[in-house]
Picture 1 (cartoon, rainbow, N blue to C red):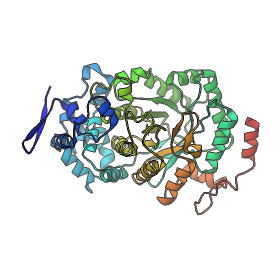
Picture 2 (picture 1 turned 45 degrees about the vertical axis):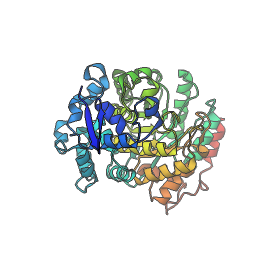
Picture 3 (picture 1 turned 60 degrees about the vertical axis):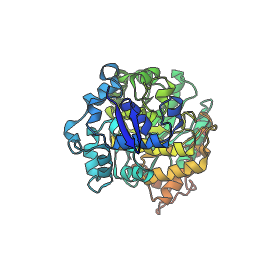
Picture 4 (picture 1 turned 120 degrees about the vertical axis):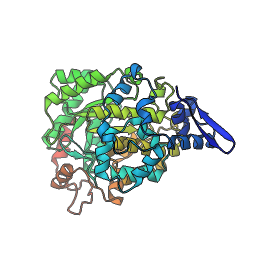
Length: 463
């Protein structure tokens, strides 16, 4: 086990191993303190960041934060590493890598070519020595495009997940939220329901309901019921019209085991969804959600800081070529991200790391009601993510999810981001909005004033 050190003045700071160095270099967050991993003070954090900056990128291919033989995610990371792609930056230290990322040499094509040559630990490490503006400007240069019934992630576009959750899975309540979202231009990333019940029969009814709406009105989007992957497999076997397979994932084998999954199960689910051939413009069929703190809450972080564990989850996502990956950044609670400042930093780190690793990254800009955060904090993070080229955000009526009981972004928040940053929906969905009279020729949302009456009739039929 190799130790690391850095001297500031008369004080020599010693870090017992690589994961200790990474944890001490992390910007302040409550989860690392909860785990006993955070730096004791700002001086120790700076020393760790300076030691980390001097570390060669190659270190992360040999000094592993979780052993190869004991973790399938580590094996996936190492076995899938693209040495040829890595050659571009293989001679650099973490500090040099930061400088290269900020240079004009690191343009969109260069970052795309490099993505499979990077490991999660490399991108987590460089994020720890970057300012907010660094994270934003590098993320902005990344473009990761995915496709199913429309095209997500194109430059100048911001998609939304229309999230019509209901505490009793009431079809009328869900349909009302879908109608509201479509009238406000939401739903191009996915129309995705978190079911109140994991009963497979109920899940299948919701899948069929979403498919009926999409097919009847020829909406160029995809649906997903965010149930456990095993339930989705049962639904597929029963003939349900499944578009996307959802699953929460983590950055260690033990975390994923706590979710009741492993890589083989995810492979089986992806193959099952592929077999349905429901995509029209592409075949990215997976939807993953992640969040800093999930490994620690499962007691499966093995002394690795929460942000590095989060980045490792993106290696899992990357392996399965997903349509959507979503950091639900403030959902786990203040035990892991205490306040608006920590949530803001974490959301931008997650977006940066995901995009640099080549995955179609979105963010649930959110917080729980007992966190030291409010909608002003979320407005700031939403704006920064919009500037940084985030692929998609959430759209929930009134920004208040009445089933999951947390605060997120509303349909109107997405309209704000699109207007102020001159962003558009996914191109196929934008054309559908125009054809339906939901947006006008000047691309301004009309709040559905011209929406055909058959939407209202459909709502009545669902009741």
